[in-house]
Image (cartoon, rainbow, N blue to C red; front, side):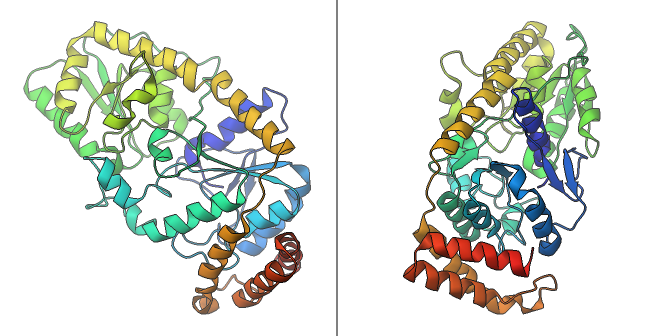
Amino acid sequence: MTGSAGQPAALAKGLRHYGVAAQSVIIGDNKFSYGADQKVDSAITDWVSVGRYLTGIVDEFDIFHLHMRPFFYWHPNKFYFPALLDLLVLKAAGKRICFHFRGSEVRRASLFRAENKFHYVDEDPERLFKKFREPSQDIYINYISAVADRVFVTDPELQSYVPGSVIIPRYFELPETFEARPLRDKNPVVLHAPSRRGVKGTEFVLSAVEQLRREGLKFEFRMVEGTSNAEILEAIADADILVDQLRIGWYGVLAVEGFALGRSVISYIRPDLVGAFGDRGMPVGNADPETLIGILREHIENPGLREANARAGREWFQKTHSTQAVIEPLLEHYQDIMHSPKPVDARGVQKFFEHQASLRDETSWLPSLPLSASMGLKKFKYLSETEGFDTAAKTLFRYLRRTIF
C-alpha cells in the first residue's frame, strides 16, 4: 500500500508475464512517485474508505501479497482496533495472504546493534527506531506470522530479524529500450543516490570523496536525491561506480538496478552474511564506513576492477533478481498455498488481541474510528473460546463489513 521502492508494481508486472492476473495497489501518494496499477485516493488511516475499497476488490483475487503493512494500519507502535484485522477478514473470506517485510518495520534495534558494528541505532538519524519500536515490532511480526500463509523478506539481513521467513529477493526488470553507456576507462563517474542520508551512510561517502579529491584522483562525483525513480535510472546508466548503502549490512534496490545496468557497485555486506553469495564470491566491492576510502580509491584507479565487478554484478542479477529468478519461485509459493493454505495460529492471534484490547482506552480520540474497540475484541474472544476460531473469524468479518465496509 506504500511505494516500497516500486517493488509491488514491478512484481505485479513480472507476474503478468506468466499469465497471472496481478494488480498492484497504492494508497495515496509516495515519496519517489512509484506507480501502481490501482491507486486509492484516500488517507492511509481512513479505514472507512479503505475498507470499502477492500470490499470492492476482495472477490476479484485469490491471493493478497502485502508489502510492509496491511490495508488497516494506523501507526507502527499503536495497533488500535481494527488495525491489522483486515488480514483476518481476508482469511475468513477464503483468501491466501503473503506478507513481505521490506526493512525498518522489522529491523529491531537490539539485534541490529549486536550484529552490525556500523549500526545507526544510537543517532537514529531518520527517527526510524522511534517510529518502529522493538516491542511493537515483536507484536507485529508474531501476529503476521500467525495469520499469513507465507512470510517473505527481501534478503538475508532482514531474514535475521524474522525467523521462519522466506527470501524473495528484490526484483527489477530492465526496460527493453533502456541502454547504459559503456564504462569509462578514465575519469570515472561515481554516483550516490540516497533515499535516506543517515541510513545509507552519505556522510561517509562525502568524506571519502573529499579525501580522494585532495589526493588528486581524477573522477567525477554525482549525488542524486529527491528525484523520481526514472531520473535515478538515467543517472545510473551514465555512471561507472555506484556507491549504495554502507551501514545496513546488505545492498538495496539501487544496487540491484546497478547490477542490471552493468555498473560497478560498492556496498557494505555484513561479515556473517558474505557466505550467502556462494562459492563465486561477492558481486560488490564490500566497503564500510572505515574502509570506503580504500575501496573507492581502488575502483577509481583500476578500470579492470570496475569491469570485473560490473560483470560479476550482471551475472548475479541474472541469477538472483531477474524475472526468471524471482517470479518463478514466487509463483511456486502461490501455487503451494492455494493447494495447502496455512491454518491461522489462534493462540498467536489471541495474544495480539489481548494487546490490542489494552489500547482501547486510547482510541476515544480517533476521529475515523466508527466503532467501539472493546466490543469487537470481546466478541471475538468469546466466540473463539466457545465456538472455535473459524466461527469467530467469520463473525468478525460480518461485523467489520457491517460497521466499516
